Figure: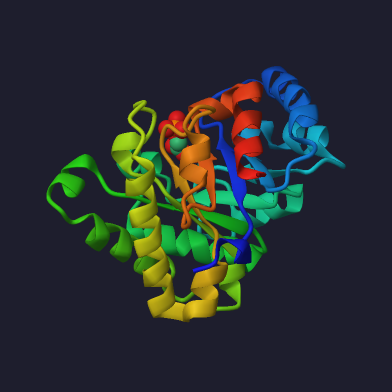
Length: 255
Ligand code: PGA
């Protein structure tokens, strides 16, 4: 597997943080710090910040994403946002299947698959999250879990559509806990996920797909994680809320 075949992407996942003025200030601070990045740079922000982020990043190398979208085109789904609404705003990326959605909002592999379908149909690029719980890792079923999540989520996705998908391996026990997977653990699972993609789509597609690691990646540990042959970037929560920290991760991915 050749790492040079694919693009590293560092994506921030702001979660439920930042008012509009705060968002604008963070982006203004970030812009000069990541201007020379030799990797993809994405910020995924709350719906209320999308327009602010799109405006503030105009003409820069920072792309904007949402943190979720609904699977229906429109209709009676109070509180939801469709992929077409995001596309119309000018949003490029959407996070789907984040473990917090799975954990707190009843997201299942099947609803993840439906959201992926809707996002692709609307012309969005998907950051698709998968990852095991601590008890699943301890039970020795990490590969079964991430393999199943990957296969179900990609159900119906064609090889041509796969270029619009980034996978993000995020062990749930490492998210927001300060417990990072070791670089070796991250690489092992990322590599396994690549073999699952190879089984579904063949070697060229597996070589080309960007597979991020996420879970307490920060300015200090990013370099070691990103140096791994199967780690093609990161999905960054906490550290994406501080411009210098996020920029340091972008720099580590740009080497
Ligand atoms: P964290 O979050 O970097 O704060 O662990 C990562 C994520 O949930 O995407």
